[in-house]
Length: 413
Length: 118
Image (cartoon, rainbow over all chains, first blue to last red; front, side, top):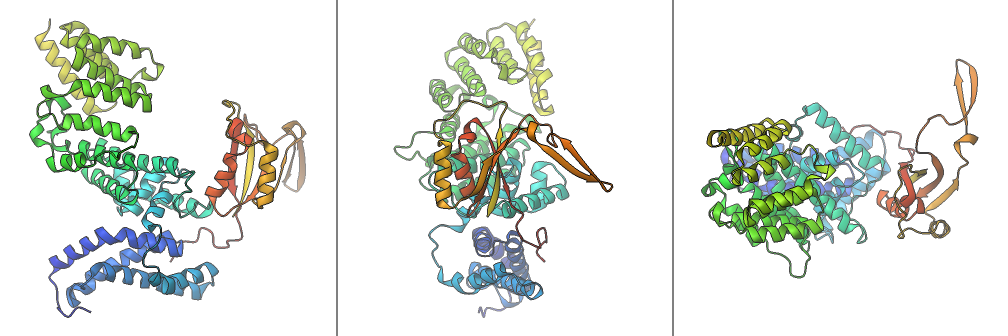
């Protein structure tokens, strides 16, 4: 093949990383499609990558590293099936072998991208939500089992078991390897978006940038694979905008509220990429599109004081129609307090405080404390913040609330 | 693939959904397509009999083997290409709206189930 001879270790690593980033998923998806064997597909790609690390330094980086990986992984899969076939004849394997050795080459442009089949199968609703997220991160994003385990804060062995169970269910329950029928597609696509967003928030909450970035890559993939879905675009924009604040939202391990973040530390490239993901004409805005629009209002205000609060209230009104959730209503009340003054915010807050779903939710008294403080009712504000501190679910949020309460205590009565 | 579809009452059932089929239509449609292999309603648990063999002795008792708030009132055996087809068929059964359906794949004759790839 290549006659350039030896290649430097750095060049090999870079070429391999690039080829894997662009081709790994395609190879895995196609091998699963032809063999139906998930482990075989993942192992064959891993084996091809190892082989590249061994042979490329000696023989040089091939002219087309991606094609080299595809061919090597397919040969590996054929070897494994042949060996297994000698041990115990299986018709399934014979069919797979035929597909791998023959038709695989001829089928240059499949009608449906195998990657899309793989995404829908990993996100099938017959799998538990946790299994869907774990499987998507492992098989679609290509994270190691150890990395997925870290994202879920469970031991690697536990995650290995969970992934195995999920793969077994796919085989045993007959979960298909295909894009759903048109009748099922909208619902299933929503499910896929939810899985990707959950992977992102999982990473975001744990301030695990690597997982959040994998989720963003998955978001880009969905935009590529389902180009006519405005919600896929909205989700990618939303994740990019949230991720753009990663360096500003956490300073020395402490959470910084949006108003107080140093906006120079926001990632402009991520914001620009998000703002370029405009709405598809004619598409009714869904929940991700609306949340992205909300985040975009903040992203385009150069100072917190310049925030366009009336637009934010209007967007929350629209979001409430799509997602009638009391948490959305709470955020709308806060925005109203910022735009129309704390009295208006308090009135809106009172209207939803009776909702039983909000009982024990720390952000309600936190918002109340914030609004009361603005009205100069410091003693009541401190009481509300005390209540919020009691209810705060994480130590980090508790410390943020304590700081705000202590600031009030210093300036108040 | 074959699935045994349990048809169960749901004690916390919601309102009926007009999108489902009438049961006679549902049976006729899926008998005609060949997806429904067999099915029937089941008599209530008062008419159930439980049979066990323990230490060489036959134990026959009145009633079901499990007390449950949800009880199985019928079953169908479905022969489908995959789970999505079975879900599609189940989703139009009248009891999808007023009860619950459980799809259990047949074990099949796969002799090396659970066998990991070398």
